[in-house]
Length: 379
Ligand SMILES: Cc1ncc(COP(=O)(O)O)c(C=O)c1O
Image (cartoon, rainbow, N blue to C red; front, top):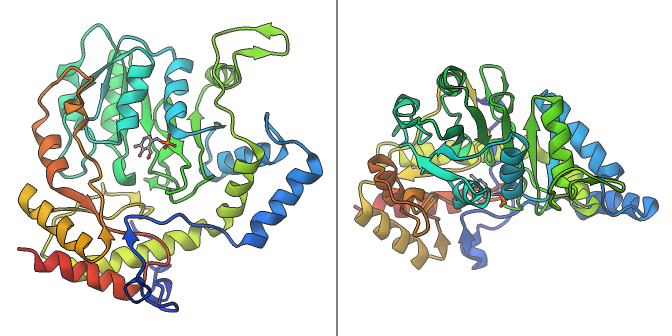
């Protein structure tokens, strides 16, 4: 399934000059800022209410709007996607060892470590770059209490297989869905799977609140616990548990409300750019694949090069032209100096030869052509 039909060449920026002519460096992403007047209108409401934080009216509105958008029972805003992971673990009572993917951003592993748990890495499926469910069962020991898997680049994990394994072994499932805003799988939000899913609303994400995140939950009891954890563990003078300050402010929620009406258009633009890259790079690079039934959000444009040498040469050729692709995701998290090392052959190999090409609304078609031509020219 694709969003085809929405994305046309009109969605690729042809209006302004390409960045090459403007002499502007091209980074892997560029934050979207909504029109100033639209953000100002939301800020006016902050000034009117004089409520700046602590579950204010805009915060509440954004929470309900997103919860309804994804059609999920509970959605709580957080100050960032890393604390979203940590507090989701804590609210679900995850302890001991956690099965996780080595191919993700470092925050997935650091959340596990900050919660005093031990990551048990399971290698990835080379097709989707998500955790390989066929390898999970052999990693389960009595100390394992949860699976934390990432929908990397917004590509859905094999949620059905993971659910079956988790149910069989009584494990909690937390999906790091930092990249998966608006991704659907088999007709419903990918966030509807697992015991919890977490989102990042960092400025570079498809939808953002400058800094921010959210946790999606399916149980009222866990939701109550999460709200306590997010706000110091007390209600009034009554203290219930060791809490954290993980609240989102009104000013951040206001940015979210101002960005939200633009999300469809942003996805269409990203889709059009990805389509152009696809055409220009056909036969030259490998790309991770989407499971059947995915409605994708075009959050990233990862390419797998032949080997480490070609990857280095492509990045050097791009940076010579002021174009900065990123090694998303590197290093393979099992090789971090502060985790117990375990060999993860596929993840290590994929992380050595994968880069994400620049992808953001407003990226000019001429710049896309230039980037693709550089990639093609490196043999
Ligand atoms: C997969 C993944 N998980 C977690 C995070 C952390 O999110 P945040 O930057 O909002 O703390 C990120 C951030 O980029 C991410 O890519």
